[in-house]
Amino acid sequence: MEDRSKERRRPGKGKSGDDSREDRLRTALRANLARRKAQARARSEKSAQETGGSNDTGGDES
Image (cartoon, rainbow, N blue to C red; front, top):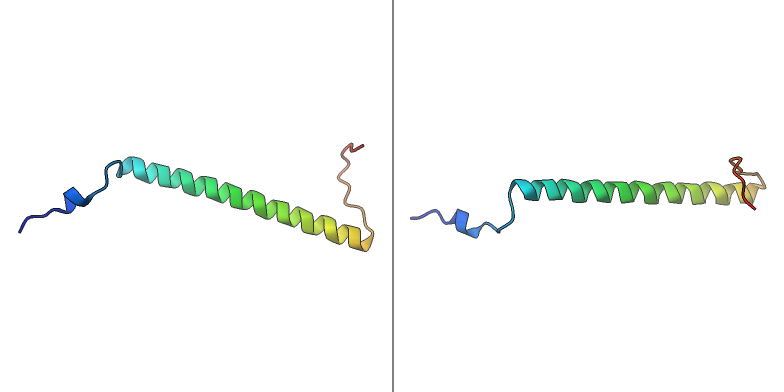
């Protein structure tokens, strides 16, 4: 019986496929982190407004 596992492999996969997977995971992780930070900021701003406190970071907003 012949081993045809090599014939079943998808073209373009291999070492470069591992690199692209790492890039996709890295991008997804950064997006997730940015989303979580934005959610945390929104929560802290909302709680500061509800308590009447100021969440001013010293920036110049007109």
